[in-house]
Image (cartoon, rainbow, N blue to C red; front, side, top):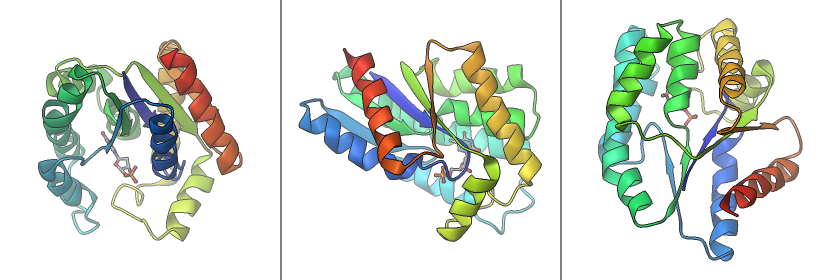
Length: 203
Ligand code: TMP
């Protein structure tokens, strides 16, 4: 089972994954957490290039392709092999981030973006995607306070609003794969909701 967590900046995905993994392991499931971009040695190096604040001149097409390069590596090196052994892979972001950020955010051609994703992933689509939805201003403030500011966070508020709207559009287009949680709620409630959605799916 391949599960992905998605959301705009500061929605808390990263803080939820360790507790979620621990919980599922206590229930007896074999779970492997990973993140994008990154999750492999090559992917982490690409992540640094993409997020480096001083790479301000990076073109959106370069950005899109670098995310696909990191993705192709993690799919082939980690995700597909783990899924084949029956493990549950929980990924902090995956291909929907590209549709939201590079497609909707940068307003690149969505069909072309989808074609690149298909090439990079060999058509590997998550079984379940949870969107932690949050107001853009609140999320960006959270990230600034946490001192985790990267090159993408520095894009305009309008960019991040297009990202959030893009996610909500994807949910509308594919409600069977997506579940939405209001990430503005208390952390514990959000964690409980994530657990419940995943357990329901596993059953
Ligand atoms: P995060 O680890 O804090 O979520 O940072 C990852 C950043 O990369 C975040 O700003 C979203 C962005 N991103 C994309 O723009 N496209 C992608 O395909 C992925 C995986 C992430």
